Image (cartoon, rainbow, N blue to C red):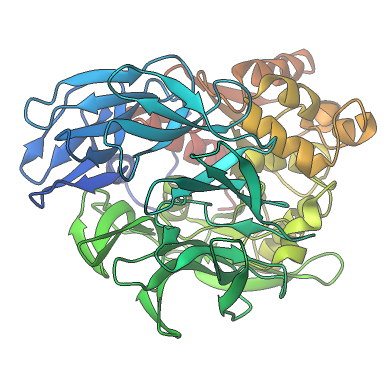
Length: 583
């Protein structure tokens, strides 16, 4: 199959291939820290893997992806994560900043992450791991490797913060729904509820890990208990709290600055603004894009910034510091639009329009499911828009950023009203003149892409990347924290609700698929194992359904390697070009 002139909107095949290569080479920063001498150390993609670098050049050349460096005071070394093949089973390594040599701290096949040094005991590191069950909080002694579990909650630990004196540690128990804050007293070993409210969430860790949430003025967090939106609050040591900033917008990942201000993320359609609260007044540090991995260093606010033109640069107080993720070529910025769903509900979306007459329409379903159609660089969206397709990325029911009621609308209804919101997105594109409409999605979006052509007749082609095929077997085969999330969203186990699990599983509707399908899968995916997709492929083959299967043995939950990105986006554009093009 080759890309036609129509698909590339009269651009030459060579120019388009060069553009896809430029997109694929855009790899952003993946974690950073600063040495006492003021040298930035960050993880950047080089030679097919992530390694640690400084502005003066490469620091490490290790096997696997080395990311998320943290300076270890008194030891004069760095702590970093290592992932091999996208398995998300992170080893913790100690790195010599002079030689770049690495020494394993934890190399045990578990998912060890969100690691940081104890505030007063320099040879102790706290971290989150799935070594016993879903996700718990632990410490490891660097000198002898002793691991101690701290948390006792049945809910997964999503983030935590040490008290300034290191005697207590507050952690977030629970992912999204009904999350609460608990506190462990290291002196007594007790693990008690710190802040919990009914029918609401108390949280300080979503994209980040909770660092900086405990300061001299208390614990900063968000709660949607009073307004239905995540508002800023500060708790005293006994758990009593007061609201500090209320504006009926969801906020995430608050932390203290060294000067006593609070920095936080605020959802605004696809943008997650970085904002700062000072003496009751709020200012904006970064107004657009996605801004994560926020840290205050020597009075400055650092963060990883991504938008439609970069995969993730390091910024400081609004200005770029490390620019390794920018696309060397044109990209499309989205337009915010809304459309009406089947019951009159208004759905917000991002519309990406090509610079030529559109050759077809594509709905981009986001993952999660509790996520959003964010505004950072999405390589597939950019490739499709560059090829002449109009791409619509909706925030369907269950999405973040619109308050608790909208987010919980998909509870016990995955693949229900949110799927009809996706179908309404296809209708919106057809009303704009797109005769043929496809759907593409990754993870939960991949499942929506499969349901879109199995359970509905709204689409003319579908591309699913790492999409769940059967929710019952997904609960059995995925890693623990993902299974916990699915059980919560379905409001019960498969044995308790077999009809619901079957009704919302794409495998149920294979007989009804009568349009072309592209299936993309990572061989090392820990969230959607390859065995799930193998069942779908066998079923498609048995029924003689037109399909393509693209398997990357060295990828996990997504497509990250440069060469694989080129192949994936090339195949995706060719696939939709052959099935949707209207000219």
